[in-house]
Length: 170
Image 1 (cartoon, rainbow, N blue to C red):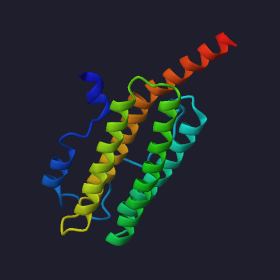
Image 2 (cartoon, helix red, strand yellow):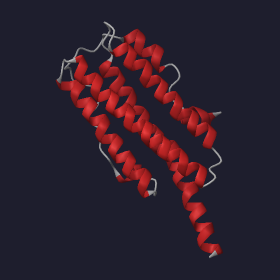
Image 3 (spheres, one colour):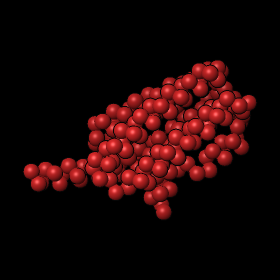
Image 4 (cartoon, rainbow, N blue to C red):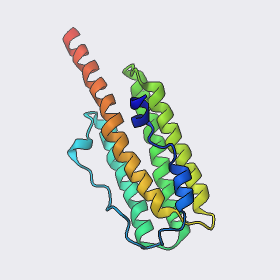
């Protein structure tokens, strides 16, 4: 059960953000800075690590738009870009999971789906009268760091073990 909570730390966020809508003004200082890529985020798979770097960049563009722009269309577009890149990455990562026979594939895939659904819900709220952009930026940044450090790292360990087995058999 604990592993599943780490896999999908989304439950309650949508409701909480809905309740907090409008508590952070556009252009105000967010309670965090941009995401900074650190070596501890690398899982050891070049393709996944490169994707993660690109997702960090896309999320940082959204964070900048939230911090410095009051135009909901622009922040909405930046959120959409980050969402599309995440979708592309998730599909690529899920294919790798299948290729390496990852034992937590279904749980990991569902976590991706839950995240994308939360972003879709946030995007719908984004264009309502309630501005939750800062809270959404915080959610995305927090989720991404936790997911990479706690969930994708386990996938990286599995991939490394699979590669070791292949080398021993060769």
